[in-house]
Length: 205
Image 1 (cartoon, rainbow, N blue to C red):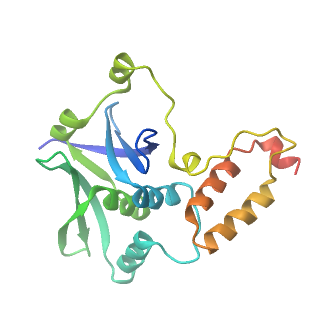
Image 2: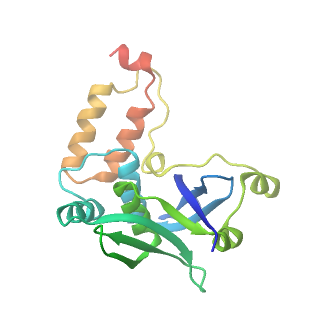
Image 3: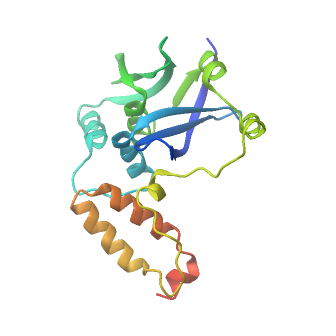
């Protein structure tokens, strides 16, 4: 069976149906992409890692990685598959160096774990044929819209003038306070705002 390696390129938000997100995976050696619908908690878990939000206590997937390290277990890879119902699932392939075991998982949990364990993500040609799309095909069918990531949609602050924009130090302080209070939604939003500052903005502060 032909397999393709995938990379995570981002998360988009469904502006019509509240609380619905899609994680977008792209084949490494190609242009086809797979959108997988996930819920808010899973999107938050993935976005926290993508935004490098430091939490005072480990989230569920962080705890799983810590558990694996303590027992000498490594996540070798994950493989995204599609059930007959159209729902995506995944196989987690674990190894301790001698024994390899495969565990069934939700695709969202598998992706959240893979990006923390630096494990490769694969899928089959069949899945790409059934669920994949290319940006060129999508643009030909509908008016292109700029994707919105989870962090901006988690209360994205409007663009402000340089004078009105909060300082980098203040944003870092607020982000740390939000993480300590386990308000990861706000922490991710503040991280996105901090990342949006230009070098000149940071230097002037």
